[in-house]
Length: 479
Ligand SMILES: Cc1cc2nc3c(=O)[nH]c(=O)nc-3n(C[C@H](O)[C@H](O)[C@H](O)COP(=O)(O)O)c2cc1C
Image 1 (cartoon, protein in one colour):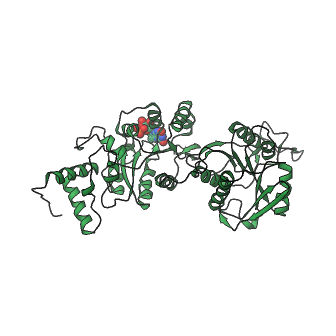
Image 2 (cartoon, protein in one colour):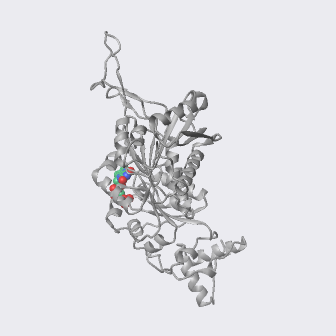
Image 3 (cartoon, protein in one colour):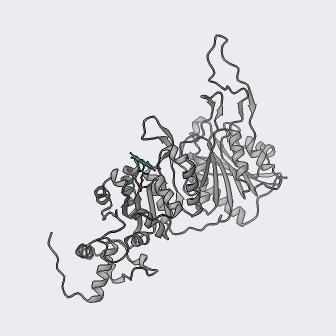
């Protein structure tokens, strides 16, 4: 590579050049190379617009090389076993044209090398609070400000504890404390650490502080034979959540509204190891929760056992049985809107075995079934605490519209989303849905049949109808 020598630079240009180099974490010589490369590719030069660090618009002008319109993420990699997945996350963010600058904690460097993060991000990697190479300013302030979003992945129990208590004893935590940008955490830890009372308290505190979390998901742990909630969300999920946070603020028509959503199946125990279940995947309810959250609502999602990551920015309560689901629904009231998308088991076993039922010569043990509480009817018929809009789902395998209409009378809800779940439709567990929205004015029921859509599209459309209802006329109350 040819060497560069620049003499007799105008003082102002020299100062801007040095500032830009410092902000981008490069030597001045490297910065000039980048600028020349940009010029040769006829990309806009940013040098002319550089402004002093610390001014309110500094972040807008100190963009990284060659792409003034790129969104910038400071990615803090914590010292957990999932740190290797952060390398894939760098790739996923860059695929989305997001500029990534990595910070590795001391512990993270036991799991991945700064060299790997640097090679993937094409940027210098930061590891030390006291960095002799940072000429111009305190590096932690720069890394906190020269981005539109800070992502912590994996967010260790330790980082979360420090954040919750305002510690700043290393570069990562100093950046997080100095940040006035949105922060997205992807926690990852052993389920015992995740469920520890101290971590629970810290998570609640961080949520109150406006920090967004994604995951952790349920699954196998790195420790042999261990499973539970604690796996870091997949890099693609984190990248999608980051992308969403980076988009310009969308209209928030449901801001200030509390939305309660149920999703997934319920598991009704037969004995400690067996249960009655159904094929619901929870995808439709989760998609509605994400769409309502995107519309600005304060969303509580109460989910039966599913294999899905928690939607970002949504309060999620995980339950097993219909009775637990009803308990959590009641605890989540008051709400403005309730959407009951869960496939709640109609019956449970009356004589649930305390021990595993054994085969005996007397033959099969008789299973007596009793009716489960009807969550939709219970909430629809509430007095003072009834949400203004109660929406039920009718999953039917025959006589879809007739059965859905009959449900109105039995349940007392305001709207019903009816869908055909017979096996040939592939709706249960699949990604698409064909629904009919039933609404009523007094005794008159209207049916609006939607074309086949992805479950995300159904969710978006349903939320749009809810917005229309709330910003226009109110939903009809049960007569
Ligand atoms: C092999 C190994 C794996 C670890 N995995 C995790 C983990 O997944 N999550 C976590 O919170 N801590 C984990 N730890 C503990 C952290 O490394 C430790 O709390 C460290 O102080 C975190 O530092 P940091 O938060 O500054 O990155 C692990 C430790 C070891 C030795």
